[in-house]
Length: 150
Image (cartoon, rainbow, N blue to C red; front, side, top):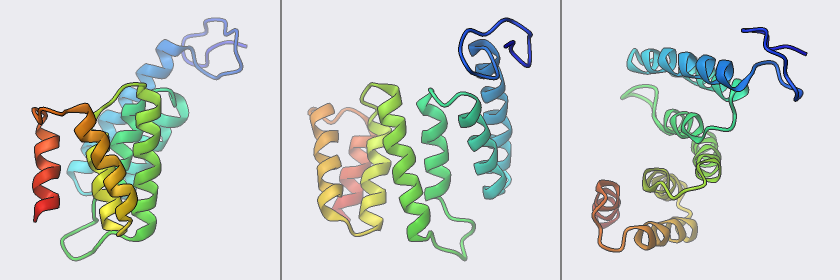
C-alpha cells in the first residue's frame, strides 16, 4: 500500500505516511483556527476531527478540540453537559498523547469538572497542577487559583 498523497510505500496499515499525515493535520488545524475565529464552532470541530483521524497521535489536536467543545456558541447560549464531557475526554487524551505534563490541559480539566460540579475530580486535577508547578510560576496555575477563589 502507498501513501495516498505522496505515493511512498507504507509498511503499516495507514492511508498516509507520517510526513503527509502531519501536513494534512496542520492544514486542517489552520482551517479550524479560521472557523473558530469566525464563530463557526461545528465546522471547527469537524476540521479538528479530520486532523485527529489523519494524525491521531498528536495531543495538540485533541487539546484544541476540547477547548472548542468547552466554548459556547454565542453569548446567548451555554455549554451543555455533553459538550463538557466531550471536552474532558479530549483534554485527557491530549495529556495521554503528549506524554508530558501540560498545565494548560489540566487547567481546562479543572474548569470542566467544576462546570459539571464534579468537585472530587476537579480537586484531583487541581492537585496535579500544584504538583507540576509548586512554585506557581505558570500563568495557568495562577489563573486556576484565581478561578477557584472567586
